[in-house]
Image (cartoon, rainbow, N blue to C red; front, side, top):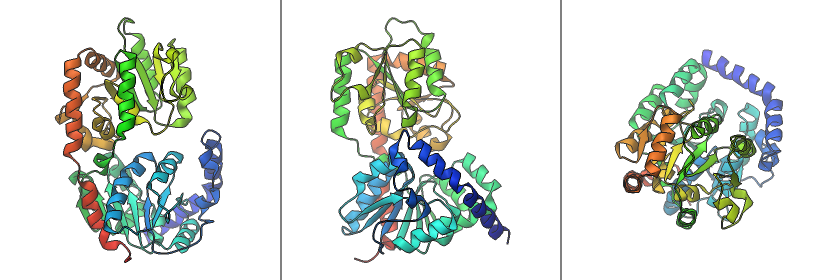
Length: 423
C-alpha cells in the first residue's frame, strides 16, 4: 500500500509540473534548437508509424549514447537485422545517436515519466526488450513496461544509494521491475542488489569500449605541433570550475605559460565561459571561429574555448594534460576514460564519486593523479607540461589503462541476446 501511494503521489506531482517542464525545454531551445523539436514525443505522441519487435535502447545524454554504441554494435553482430528504437533526453545525446541508426531504425525523445505518456509510448512502439543505460530508473516507465527491462552499464554511487534509500517506497519497486542489471563494478552491483533488483551481474564498463576517431585525434596532435607550446586543458568543465581555474591562473607567472584550453560540458554555457575568460584579461580564441585549421590570431591567443560538439578527441589530442571537469566542484566528476584512450594524462580533483572505480584504477595505473583543489591541480598540470619525459610516460600509461579494461560490450551483448526478438 505504501509503495502504491508513493507512485500515485509521484505521478500526480509530475502531472502538475508538466507545463513547467515543457516551458523549460522551450527556453533551453533558444540556445539549443533541438529541444523545441517534436515536443509531443515528450508526452508520448509520435508521428512515426507504430510497430513491434523493437530493440529499445535509452541513453539519456551524450556520454551514455557513446557508451551504448559499442553494445548496439555487438547486438547487431548477433542479430544483424534487429530494429533499433533509440531514445534520448538531451540534444547532445540525440545528435550523437544519429550515428547509431540504420535504415530501419528510429530515434525519438523519451517521454516524461507520467503514467499517460509512458503508456502511450509502449502502446505505440511495443518493444521486445528495453535497455536503459547506467542510472535511468524511472518509476512509471518500469511499472508499465510490458517487455523485459535491462539496466546496462549500471552504476550506483554510494551517494546516490543514500538518496535512493530516502525514497525507497518509490524507487525500490522500480528496481525490482528490472529483469537484469549489468553493473560496472562489484560495488555498484552490491548497491543495486540492496534496492531489490533480482538479477545483478558484474560486466565492466562500456565506456572503455569507446572508439576514438583517429583522424580527429591526429588533427589535434597536428595542432599541438603548430602551436609549438604546451596545452593545458580543463575538460568537460562544470559551473564554477572555470572561475576556480582562472583565479588560480592569475597567480602564476606569465612567462612560459601554456595555452589554456577550456571545454565546458554544456553548450548553453559557451558564451558565459567566454565572458569569464575575457574578464580575466586573457586573449581568447573560440574554436567555432575557424574551420579545419586554426587561424593565425588563434595561434597567438592566451586561451581557447572549445565551443564545438563531438570533438573531444581533438582537444585531448592537442593537450599535454587535462584537469578533469566535475571533480573540482562537488559534482562527482566526469568520464575520464575517453581522455585516457586518447593518451591524455589526467589531474583529478577530490570529487569523483560518480566514477569512483575508474578514477581509482586510473590513479593506480599512473594515468591520473589526485589533488585536493584547483590551485594544486593547476600546479600539477603545469609541472607535467614542463617535463616532457614524465608527460610521455603518463600518456603511455593512460592508453595502456584504457586498453586493459575492454571487453564489457561483448559480455553485455551476450547477456542481453536472450531477450532479442527472433528474426
